[in-house]
Image (cartoon, rainbow, N blue to C red; front, side, top):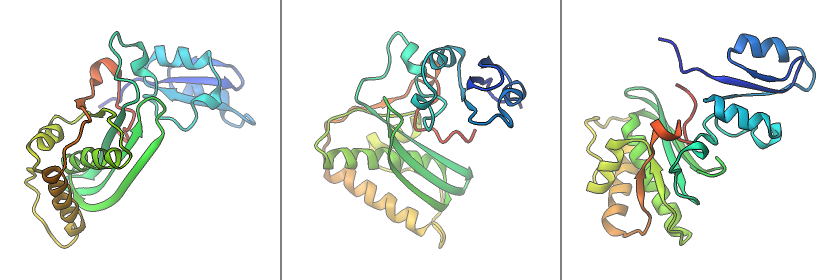
Length: 207
């Protein structure tokens, strides 16, 4: 199955501009001293990036800035969370980032024998607890309908069975459920609109 199209910006190379295949981009940058280039998920984002500087974009996720072109972008000052799991069950990680900048504010894992839904659930609760410690009412976005429902229900309704390897993960689940039961929070917990905004900025870029 073909992956999503990408648009490669070359700021410094044999030729500069936007290229629609890695092969075309590679021809401009491979062996070129000090080459500056990066992939983007849409042509609009690539065109905007080309007008700017390489150092404004390096280290940020490919999806960075996609939502700038939406009629109704995400709320300013918000945070995004996401999880990545290699296999189901498999090795699980989750993290949270600032929506506006892509700056990572926390990352947990890897945990063995987990699932993506568990990671998404834990990521939302981790973000809520992290923001409460800082007295921040900032919104939290997730692209997981399942995890959002679990947070509303204050219960991780996974079918995964506990075992020796994922015991630390189930300990975190119990702590997250207890936190939800014992704490109120002012933060809106919202669904990331992938269709309108592109991949969530917390995405691990492993698809």
